[in-house]
Image (cartoon, rainbow, N blue to C red; front, side, top):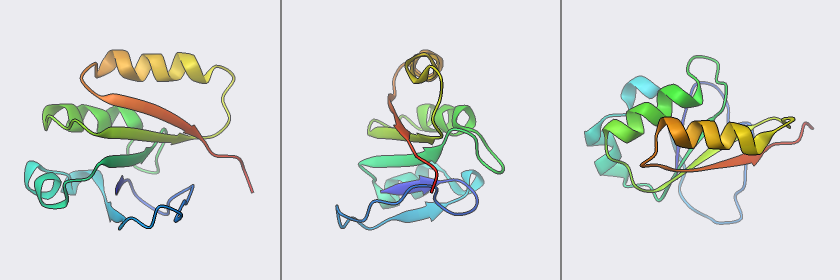
Length: 102
C-alpha cells in the first residue's frame, strides 16, 4: 500500500495487515514506484498540497496499473466524481472511498 499526500491519512484500515508507505507527491517517481510496487495507491480527493487529479496524472504517466483508492468526504454525487476522475486518466483503476467524519 502506498499513500500519496501530505499530512495524516484521513481513513485507516489496518485489517489487511499490509505495510503502508507514505510519501508526498514530489517523491513519487518511477524509481520509488518500482521499489515499493504497491497493489494499491491511496490518495485524498482534496489534499493539503495536491489533489487527486495531480496524483492520478503522475500515476498515469508512470504507467501504474494497480488500484487507485481516492479518499473523500460524503459527496452529493460520488458516482459523478468517480466518473470524472476516470475520464481524466482512463488507464487507471479509480475507486472512491467515502470517509465518514468522526
